[in-house]
Every structure is written in C-alpha cells, then in structure tokens.
Amino acid sequence: MDADTETESPIKPFAKLVLGDSSYEIAEGSNDEELLYRPAGTPLWNRLSSPRSRGWQKATAEILVSTRDALRDYVRMHLIRLSGEPGGSGPFEYDLFGFRWSYREVADAVHLKLPESDWAAVRLSEQEPPLTGRERAIDALIEGHPELHARFAPDVEAWALRISAGVQVQPVF
Image (cartoon, rainbow, N blue to C red; front, side, top):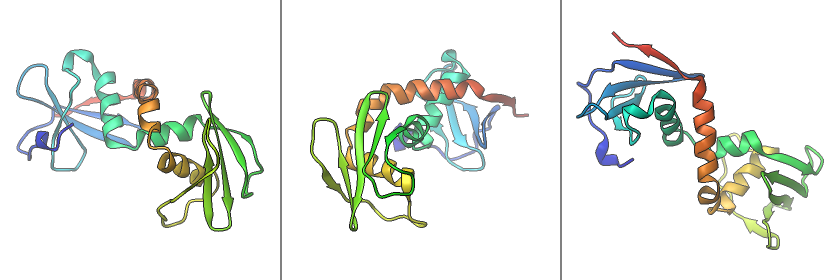
C-alpha cells in the first residue's frame, strides 16, 4: 500500500470489521469494487488492493498484514522450542515448519545459528521493558535474518486469511 493512497476524512464508513480487540472502519472507494479502511478512530483512509468481490475475509487478511507485525505474530504462534531450558541462556534450538535455527546469549551478545551457517552475533535494538526468553529469541531471528520476511510471506498471508475467518462485520449507520 502506498502512502499516496491515504486520504483525509469526509468519507463515511458503511461497515466496521471487528477481529479480537482490533476494529477497522470500511468505506467505499472511487468505484464499486474499491474499498477503503482505517483503524477505528483514526483520521486517514487506506486503499485495499483486494476488491470488494473477494469478500470480507480476504479484506480483513490484507488489513491484518498491513497494520500489524504479522511476521512476528506468525512466528510467535508457530515457533516450537526443541531444546534448551526455559530461563537459561541457551543454546536453544527452535523449529518453524522445518526451518531449524538456534539461539544463545554469550556475555552481553546474542548469537544465531541459521540453517547451513555458523554462529553469528546479532545486534538487537533494546526495548523497554527489555525482551527476555522466547520473545528475545524471536526478535533476534527477525532482526538477524531479514530474508525471513520473503521466505515466509506466503505462509503469513495464508495464516492471516485463516485468522480473519473470525471477523465480525457490523453495519455503520
């Protein structure tokens, strides 16, 4: 979605999509197939690339991928720890649908061992509060392996489509 596609409001929503604790307003675009969305309570509208004819589930999946850190959510939901003691410094071995990798902390450094590579240090941006345990390992994987986005993009989109099956569509009068 391009930043150029955002428009200021006098556009009136006709529907509200509710998924978990998130809600989005939906409005008609410039033609019968185009839809606009915005997180509820925000001023700017964004165009959906998915046409109206593809349905609410597809529109909701597109919104999820564009408004959240969908890769992080996907990894968080599907990651399996194969070895390593919780609360320890590692090494830990993880599996993400056949993508096996390892994580460890040595002194003040974080290291990753990706498939077909040796241990390599990863520089993480510090967060408040600091991430620990599994969340820190996920952060290290995403920061230390930028190709992960491309590798799992189709899986993340399919996951978002499954999650969006739970969307509630409410009319706005």
